[in-house]
Length: 434
Image 1 (spheres, one colour):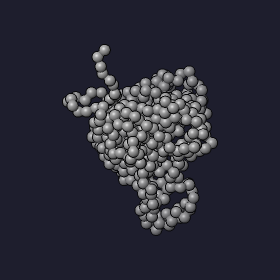
Image 2: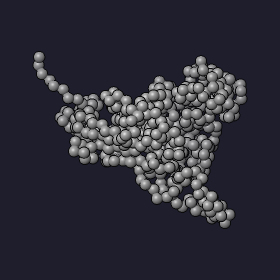
Image 3: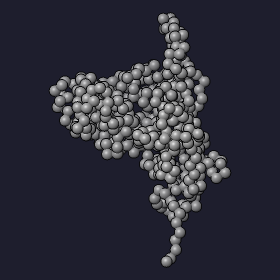
Image 4: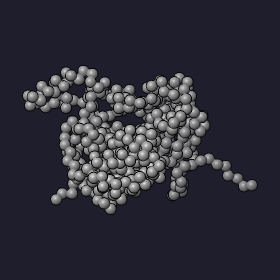
């Protein structure tokens, strides 16, 4: 008997851009007319790939296109790719919270999913009631759930609030309990999206350990989506790499991470994501400020293809205000530099030097300029991520991971004179005898 528990065959998912329902009746009638005559859906022949960096010519977009792969019992499969690559759409199809436009999936066993904060919980019910509700959905008896109850509560660390409605939980408490339920109620397949990023470092480590244990010790299957490459490397046997809705790699994790890093090696230039696209905005109804583009310039204002250690550079973050009624009174920006292993090497945060940007400042300009007088990173390849933070409640207006990959060359503060290059940063210093 085959030990394949998930088989994905030619999965595709098509979305129509624009406001939901506008002008759709004629399309529905046209689809029906083709169907009754035994002909193919005419709209499956059209549509752009899901590349947010390009302006499309079609009102249809393929979020996923012809995806095929298999997952074995006990395997931990990582699904990686840039923002908008189609990872979350694929997980929603596998979780059966949405249906594919074409293709089929075959799943053997019960599936528990943790896709986003709030998934699977009733906000008016207490944590206790939601544990029993989720267990019942998974087909477990009350006795089976009771047997696991204390273990779930202890793992989540919410014993004091277990009889409080979960709508009053913080996002971290919500995710801790949701993961505890999903991991301990013994589904054959556990699907986890990037939602674990909401938790603190200790909880993330705890979750990764639990996923490793249920795979290795209990033979259960895990599908894991993350931008945390060290976590993917340590946890996953194999990875599937998605790019613009298409599978570009399937295989061993180490090879997949190398291909992912290689695919992201772009020349430094103005990269503009189509955040004004109605499809993108309607996916985020609470959108406030959205990142648009990022540039790196030299002292003459010219876009540069590489940076030298110790060089003076200017970074520009372009953003768009989508909701002027939101309080922006305490806003700050950050730029993170990560190495190819996904380790954060350096974070620049605006509030440390400039304080918080006020409502009037944020509204008057949609560009933030950052001058780095002495670029500190040594020779290597790094990725850049952008955060726009609402300090009023420690939430994010926008987060963009790995928007750009940059190459750093030897400069005035670092050279290859010695065979071993030590450390990760370089800084200027004067040396003299005293």
